Image 1 (cartoon, rainbow, N blue to C red):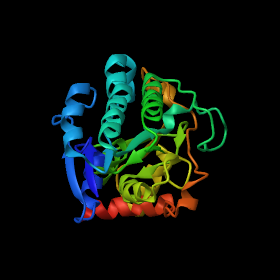
Image 2: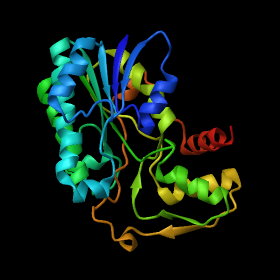
Image 3: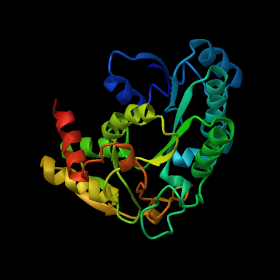
Length: 279
């Protein structure tokens, strides 16, 4: 396949590019290469390539920055996917767009599936829902992948906290906010198999177990024998601008039917991250 990848400089983009088989023809664009919020730039860059599929990993993911800079959030997370959908329609390509568990309010009390109604509570969540709406309105041949609490990309919270504990420095993890922690490599491995099914729609691809960040770091500390102390943290203590869902964990009604391999248990994901750090 001929692939156009946006957001190639982020954790998911870098991981996907490292894993994609060499027989695929890939054009990759970082934010510096292509601002997806710029309609003319997107059309002039993507359409002439005539890719079979556009994979959109570009996003503004800093939740608090989205809350304080909503215009930038909507440009990156809502306008950008709409622009890519228009470009994909113009050149007859499929679009895969990555969305988030934060389109939900966290009040369900159990994991959200693809049929649950979104109700975001932050500018980040609203902007990401806006991207979903744009993609669905413009292009029938699309995949929307909602994922949750992605870690292991190199500059994320979990990777940095594990690095601190490995150096003997204390770290802290939230105990009162839950998602489906997803190892970035496991997510990246499932992107292309999903595209190749040709079965368009919205899918949840996220870690196998609902957990807090404290849960994730506790397992890392135990499995890795990390010397740094780990303490519990509560959301209210942090005074952050953006509200977060209490429990935005995800489950899929459809992924198994597609033949997409289930996500490994959280302990396996954490062990793989620790092993990757040691290499």
